Length: 151
Image (tube, rainbow, N blue to C red; front, side, top):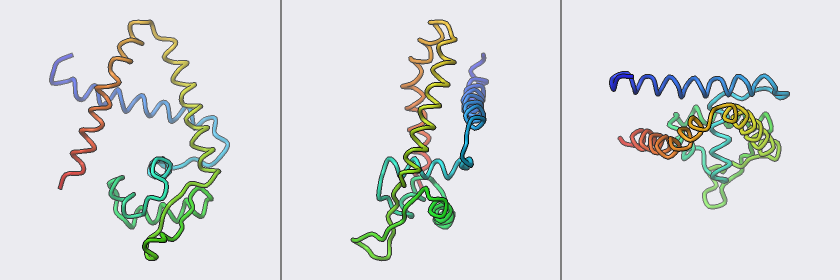
């Protein structure tokens, strides 16, 4: 692979793996599937319980009204709780429902089992290469996130 082709091949491989994992996991779902932004918002609220709508919008790099729409949908579907912030009665804090916590936990467990099974099918050299790539992939994600935060 040429140095010029590397970025595109890396991006294609990452997208391909993610897409196939999602498709395989969706096949066994018994609840209506969440759109990507809904799932991202739930995961953000799980990581930062009590986050506000505007902060969530900033973190997800989405317009505030888009996140408000997602919040309304997820509240209506029983996945999110929106409560008034005691420090600022005009603001809302977001919390997961027990149903959302269960859904995220089940998804993670199923995803881990699927990936574990597929990684176990690889030879030891490929497994070692994937393990060694994880820190660099995390740094790549951090760089992309930091760059998106710059004005």
